[in-house]
Image (tube, one colour):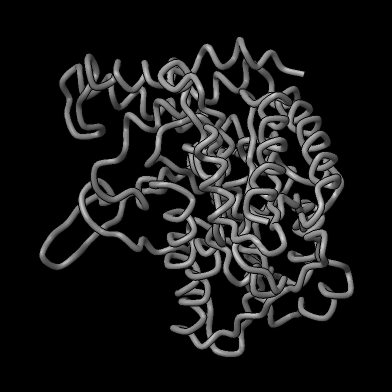
Length: 404
């Protein structure tokens, strides 16, 4: 397993909160000093708007911003940096895809297909687009382990399907979808595949060319980068079919009273002043993860999942959501306890220094389909250890005894 004590030393949050056991990484990860330092360096010695000025400081900032785009493209193995659009995060990326592609390419009688475990950030934009265009939204019902069986795909996917929007990994179930396999069947009927990669990008090595998805959205803040920076990967041949849903400075070639000529993509989709510091710091986060190794991080998380799943199975009244197989989920486990509200459990655990998420996790349709109320979610990352999970399990039993 990873040397979590050594890794934790790189994260100032753990020095400032020595008793903190942080298990809410699916919501946002903590930030290493190298990422914080990169933000500070930009605002201290490089701050200028990009692609605006011909003076040295602006040129330096522009060069760093453009390099960040290339680095992100390399990180997910995009064909070109032109396929990388910087956004505020996954939510912004999915809204961009829905507004700039969905609105212009869907019509009545078309169908959009989604799973029942989608985050609201993926579900709501496509629901809205369907309502505006007259297209039909159809839902793929997942099995108890979070997988979608072949029969379900066969009954819902057809020639009317124009867009399939699905999470690479569920933020509640932890289930990892086989996007490459899904891509093949989606493209077979001529549909476009939009992937919500928010929960996958911190844990898996993403190769968008191998996955053959058409869109891939993710946030920086779940993978050690700052909040407010995200990415939408779009295949270049699809970018030419998209109209910008935000207009303003930076995304035009020329403007007159009679005519507007838009800039080439990706700048065409980045109206206004971009989050330059965030994009540059995202590269620092990528460098940090790459140095440790995503495969090593993944192995570490699987071992933690095995430990936690085994421990939860021994506690009476605990009901697990998703697969019981550690290798089939990302670094998170959601569960409920019979007769005790998740918020009460979370409050008890918080007083012991444990930071967990309690609620519907922005996936209310999933909880409704599972006939369960709010759940507790423990999500762990490269700086978490078995000791952290041992403290969780011990205090969970105490909490159950207290409320029971």
